Image (cartoon, rainbow, N blue to C red; front, top):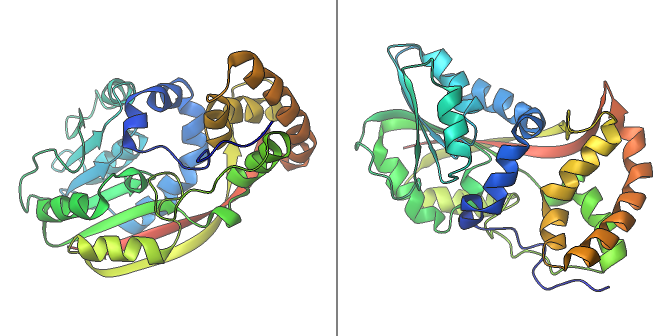
Length: 291
Protein backbone atom coordinates (compact mmCIF):
# COMPACT_ATOMS: atom_id res chain seq x y z
CA UNK A 1 0.00 0.00 0.00
CA UNK A 2 1.17 3.53 -0.58
CA UNK A 3 0.26 6.93 0.84
CA UNK A 4 -2.20 9.19 -0.94
CA UNK A 5 -1.38 12.83 -1.67
CA UNK A 6 -2.74 15.28 0.85
CA UNK A 7 -3.99 12.81 3.45
CA UNK A 8 -2.35 14.83 6.18
CA UNK A 9 -4.10 17.84 4.76
CA UNK A 10 -6.81 18.44 7.33
CA UNK A 11 -10.42 19.12 6.38
CA UNK A 12 -11.73 22.61 5.93
CA UNK A 13 -14.88 23.99 7.55
CA UNK A 14 -17.30 22.27 5.18
CA UNK A 15 -16.28 18.89 6.61
CA UNK A 16 -18.04 19.89 9.83
CA UNK A 17 -21.28 20.13 7.88
CA UNK A 18 -20.99 16.46 6.93
CA UNK A 19 -19.28 13.33 8.19
CA UNK A 20 -16.91 14.96 10.66
CA UNK A 21 -19.71 16.78 12.48
CA UNK A 22 -21.77 13.59 12.52
CA UNK A 23 -18.91 11.56 13.99
CA UNK A 24 -18.07 14.22 16.58
CA UNK A 25 -21.72 14.28 17.67
CA UNK A 26 -21.78 10.47 17.88
CA UNK A 27 -18.67 10.46 20.09
CA UNK A 28 -19.39 13.73 21.86
CA UNK A 29 -18.76 12.69 25.46
CA UNK A 30 -15.45 11.02 24.57
CA UNK A 31 -14.37 14.13 22.66
CA UNK A 32 -15.44 16.41 25.50
CA UNK A 33 -13.33 14.37 27.92
CA UNK A 34 -10.37 14.69 25.56
CA UNK A 35 -10.88 18.46 25.13
CA UNK A 36 -11.66 19.27 28.77
CA UNK A 37 -8.18 20.65 29.44
CA UNK A 38 -8.75 23.16 26.63
CA UNK A 39 -11.89 24.46 28.34
CA UNK A 40 -10.15 24.64 31.70
CA UNK A 41 -7.18 26.64 30.36
CA UNK A 42 -9.36 28.84 28.17
CA UNK A 43 -11.90 29.62 30.89
CA UNK A 44 -9.11 30.67 33.23
CA UNK A 45 -7.71 33.06 30.62
CA UNK A 46 -11.12 34.46 29.66
CA UNK A 47 -12.32 34.98 33.26
CA UNK A 48 -15.91 35.79 32.22
CA UNK A 49 -17.60 38.16 34.65
CA UNK A 50 -21.28 38.44 35.65
CA UNK A 51 -23.29 40.45 33.14
CA UNK A 52 -20.83 40.12 30.24
CA UNK A 53 -21.80 39.33 26.65
CA UNK A 54 -19.58 36.67 25.09
CA UNK A 55 -19.33 35.00 21.67
CA UNK A 56 -18.35 31.31 21.63
CA UNK A 57 -16.96 30.45 18.18
CA UNK A 58 -17.10 26.84 17.00
CA UNK A 59 -19.00 25.88 20.13
CA UNK A 60 -19.67 22.25 19.13
CA UNK A 61 -21.85 20.55 21.72
CA UNK A 62 -21.83 23.76 23.83
CA UNK A 63 -19.99 22.51 26.90
CA UNK A 64 -17.86 25.64 26.56
CA UNK A 65 -20.95 27.81 26.03
CA UNK A 66 -22.54 26.43 29.17
CA UNK A 67 -19.47 27.08 31.32
CA UNK A 68 -19.31 30.68 30.13
CA UNK A 69 -23.07 31.18 30.54
CA UNK A 70 -22.94 29.97 34.13
CA UNK A 71 -20.13 32.47 34.80
CA UNK A 72 -21.86 35.50 33.23
CA UNK A 73 -25.13 34.65 34.96
CA UNK A 74 -28.71 35.51 34.03
CA UNK A 75 -27.87 39.18 33.36
CA UNK A 76 -25.21 38.24 30.80
CA UNK A 77 -25.51 36.62 27.41
CA UNK A 78 -23.57 33.99 25.50
CA UNK A 79 -24.04 33.28 21.80
CA UNK A 80 -22.51 30.09 20.42
CA UNK A 81 -21.91 29.75 16.68
CA UNK A 82 -21.23 26.45 14.93
CA UNK A 83 -21.59 25.20 11.34
CA UNK A 84 -22.37 21.55 12.15
CA UNK A 85 -26.07 20.71 11.72
CA UNK A 86 -25.48 17.61 13.82
CA UNK A 87 -23.83 19.36 16.78
CA UNK A 88 -26.09 22.41 17.01
CA UNK A 89 -29.24 20.51 18.12
CA UNK A 90 -27.16 18.76 20.80
CA UNK A 91 -25.83 22.14 21.89
CA UNK A 92 -29.29 23.68 22.05
CA UNK A 93 -30.62 20.82 24.15
CA UNK A 94 -27.62 21.11 26.49
CA UNK A 95 -28.45 24.78 27.14
CA UNK A 96 -32.23 24.51 27.41
CA UNK A 97 -32.25 25.51 31.09
CA UNK A 98 -30.05 28.61 30.63
CA UNK A 99 -32.02 31.51 29.09
CA UNK A 100 -28.86 33.63 28.83
CA UNK A 101 -27.30 31.13 26.37
CA UNK A 102 -28.14 30.57 22.72
CA UNK A 103 -26.58 28.51 19.92
CA UNK A 104 -27.21 29.11 16.25
CA UNK A 105 -26.19 27.23 13.12
CA UNK A 106 -23.99 29.80 11.41
CA UNK A 107 -20.68 30.62 9.78
CA UNK A 108 -18.78 32.81 12.24
CA UNK A 109 -17.60 35.14 9.48
CA UNK A 110 -20.99 35.60 7.83
CA UNK A 111 -23.48 35.69 10.71
CA UNK A 112 -24.82 39.21 11.39
CA UNK A 113 -23.59 40.39 14.78
CA UNK A 114 -24.38 43.66 16.52
CA UNK A 115 -21.35 45.95 15.98
CA UNK A 116 -19.63 46.66 19.28
CA UNK A 117 -22.21 44.62 21.13
CA UNK A 118 -19.97 41.99 22.71
CA UNK A 119 -17.44 42.13 25.53
CA UNK A 120 -15.43 39.05 24.62
CA UNK A 121 -14.84 36.31 22.09
CA UNK A 122 -13.91 32.76 23.02
CA UNK A 123 -13.02 29.69 21.00
CA UNK A 124 -11.80 26.25 21.96
CA UNK A 125 -10.42 24.43 18.90
CA UNK A 126 -12.67 26.33 16.47
CA UNK A 127 -10.69 29.10 14.79
CA UNK A 128 -8.19 26.79 13.04
CA UNK A 129 -10.80 25.71 10.47
CA UNK A 130 -11.71 29.05 8.86
CA UNK A 131 -11.44 29.28 5.06
CA UNK A 132 -10.53 32.99 5.17
CA UNK A 133 -9.20 33.70 8.68
CA UNK A 134 -8.31 37.41 8.26
CA UNK A 135 -11.75 38.25 6.84
CA UNK A 136 -13.50 36.27 9.55
CA UNK A 137 -11.53 38.00 12.28
CA UNK A 138 -12.23 41.42 10.80
CA UNK A 139 -15.93 40.61 11.08
CA UNK A 140 -15.57 39.29 14.63
CA UNK A 141 -13.51 42.28 15.73
CA UNK A 142 -16.29 44.62 14.57
CA UNK A 143 -18.68 42.71 16.81
CA UNK A 144 -16.54 43.40 19.90
CA UNK A 145 -16.65 46.65 21.82
CA UNK A 146 -13.43 48.73 21.65
CA UNK A 147 -10.90 46.98 23.85
CA UNK A 148 -12.97 43.81 23.93
CA UNK A 149 -10.92 40.71 24.54
CA UNK A 150 -10.45 37.48 22.65
CA UNK A 151 -9.26 34.14 24.03
CA UNK A 152 -8.60 31.21 21.70
CA UNK A 153 -7.32 27.76 22.59
CA UNK A 154 -5.63 25.94 19.71
CA UNK A 155 -3.40 22.92 19.24
CA UNK A 156 0.32 23.68 19.26
CA UNK A 157 3.09 21.97 17.35
CA UNK A 158 2.15 18.76 15.61
CA UNK A 159 5.51 17.25 16.58
CA UNK A 160 4.73 17.91 20.26
CA UNK A 161 1.36 16.15 20.00
CA UNK A 162 1.64 12.36 20.46
CA UNK A 163 -2.19 12.12 20.49
CA UNK A 164 -2.00 12.81 16.75
CA UNK A 165 1.50 11.63 15.84
CA UNK A 166 1.40 8.12 17.31
CA UNK A 167 -1.65 7.01 15.28
CA UNK A 168 -0.24 8.58 12.10
CA UNK A 169 3.13 6.91 12.66
CA UNK A 170 1.44 3.51 12.85
CA UNK A 171 -0.60 4.31 9.75
CA UNK A 172 2.44 5.31 7.71
CA UNK A 173 4.12 2.02 8.63
CA UNK A 174 1.20 0.26 6.95
CA UNK A 175 0.24 2.69 4.18
CA UNK A 176 3.41 4.60 3.42
CA UNK A 177 3.96 8.33 3.86
CA UNK A 178 1.24 10.92 3.34
CA UNK A 179 1.93 14.35 1.94
CA UNK A 180 2.18 16.85 4.81
CA UNK A 181 -0.39 19.58 5.17
CA UNK A 182 0.64 23.04 4.05
CA UNK A 183 1.49 25.32 7.00
CA UNK A 184 -1.61 27.19 8.06
CA UNK A 185 -4.03 24.99 6.11
CA UNK A 186 -7.42 24.65 7.85
CA UNK A 187 -7.36 21.82 10.36
CA UNK A 188 -6.43 20.87 13.93
CA UNK A 189 -2.86 22.13 13.49
CA UNK A 190 -3.74 25.13 11.35
CA UNK A 191 -2.60 27.49 14.12
CA UNK A 192 0.28 25.43 15.47
CA UNK A 193 2.78 28.31 15.32
CA UNK A 194 2.69 32.00 16.29
CA UNK A 195 4.15 32.64 12.84
CA UNK A 196 0.73 31.60 11.54
CA UNK A 197 -1.76 33.04 14.02
CA UNK A 198 -0.16 36.39 14.86
CA UNK A 199 -0.34 37.73 11.26
CA UNK A 200 -3.92 36.47 10.95
CA UNK A 201 -5.03 38.31 14.09
CA UNK A 202 -3.13 41.46 13.10
CA UNK A 203 -4.77 41.38 9.66
CA UNK A 204 -8.12 41.08 11.44
CA UNK A 205 -7.42 44.28 13.37
CA UNK A 206 -6.55 42.75 16.75
CA UNK A 207 -3.74 44.03 18.97
CA UNK A 208 -2.03 43.18 22.26
CA UNK A 209 -1.60 39.65 20.96
CA UNK A 210 -0.06 37.22 23.41
CA UNK A 211 0.00 33.49 24.06
CA UNK A 212 1.03 30.89 26.56
CA UNK A 213 2.02 27.38 25.51
CA UNK A 214 1.05 24.47 27.74
CA UNK A 215 2.15 20.83 27.59
CA UNK A 216 -0.93 18.73 28.35
CA UNK A 217 -2.17 15.17 28.53
CA UNK A 218 -5.57 14.15 27.17
CA UNK A 219 -7.66 10.98 27.69
CA UNK A 220 -8.50 9.27 24.42
CA UNK A 221 -11.86 7.66 23.66
CA UNK A 222 -13.21 7.61 27.22
CA UNK A 223 -16.17 5.27 27.61
CA UNK A 224 -16.35 3.93 24.07
CA UNK A 225 -15.40 0.36 25.09
CA UNK A 226 -14.85 -1.52 28.38
CA UNK A 227 -11.10 -1.73 27.76
CA UNK A 228 -9.31 1.66 27.67
CA UNK A 229 -6.97 0.66 24.84
CA UNK A 230 -9.88 -0.52 22.72
CA UNK A 231 -11.73 2.71 23.59
CA UNK A 232 -8.81 4.76 22.28
CA UNK A 233 -8.61 2.62 19.15
CA UNK A 234 -12.31 3.12 18.45
CA UNK A 235 -11.84 6.88 18.54
CA UNK A 236 -8.76 6.74 16.31
CA UNK A 237 -10.66 4.54 13.86
CA UNK A 238 -13.53 7.01 13.52
CA UNK A 239 -12.08 10.50 14.07
CA UNK A 240 -8.80 12.13 13.12
CA UNK A 241 -6.16 11.84 10.40
CA UNK A 242 -6.06 8.04 10.34
CA UNK A 243 -9.83 7.83 10.04
CA UNK A 244 -9.83 10.32 7.15
CA UNK A 245 -7.08 8.34 5.44
CA UNK A 246 -9.08 5.13 5.67
CA UNK A 247 -12.18 6.77 4.17
CA UNK A 248 -10.25 7.23 0.90
CA UNK A 249 -10.10 3.42 0.45
CA UNK A 250 -12.56 0.74 -0.47
CA UNK A 251 -14.20 -0.67 2.66
CA UNK A 252 -12.46 -4.06 2.56
CA UNK A 253 -9.05 -2.49 1.98
CA UNK A 254 -9.64 0.00 4.80
CA UNK A 255 -10.65 -2.80 7.17
CA UNK A 256 -7.49 -4.78 6.36
CA UNK A 257 -5.31 -1.72 6.82
CA UNK A 258 -6.99 -0.87 10.13
CA UNK A 259 -6.30 -4.33 11.52
CA UNK A 260 -2.60 -3.80 10.86
CA UNK A 261 -2.60 -0.26 12.25
CA UNK A 262 -4.44 -1.35 15.41
CA UNK A 263 -2.01 -4.23 15.88
CA UNK A 264 0.86 -1.74 15.90
CA UNK A 265 -0.92 0.70 18.20
CA UNK A 266 -2.01 -1.67 20.98
CA UNK A 267 1.48 -2.18 22.48
CA UNK A 268 2.16 1.56 22.13
CA UNK A 269 -1.06 2.60 23.88
CA UNK A 270 -1.09 -0.02 26.65
CA UNK A 271 1.65 1.65 28.74
CA UNK A 272 -0.26 4.94 28.51
CA UNK A 273 -3.26 3.63 30.49
CA UNK A 274 -3.91 5.50 33.72
CA UNK A 275 -7.10 5.86 35.76
CA UNK A 276 -9.06 3.82 33.27
CA UNK A 277 -8.07 5.74 30.13
CA UNK A 278 -5.27 6.05 27.59
CA UNK A 279 -3.57 9.40 28.17
CA UNK A 280 -1.54 10.94 25.35
CA UNK A 281 0.44 14.15 25.36
CA UNK A 282 -0.21 17.31 23.42
CA UNK A 283 0.58 20.99 23.32
CA UNK A 284 -1.93 23.85 23.52
CA UNK A 285 -1.56 27.56 22.84
CA UNK A 286 -3.86 29.87 24.81
CA UNK A 287 -3.95 33.01 22.68
CA UNK A 288 -5.16 36.39 23.94
CA UNK A 289 -5.83 39.59 21.99
CA UNK A 290 -7.75 42.88 22.13
CA UNK A 291 -10.11 44.47 19.65
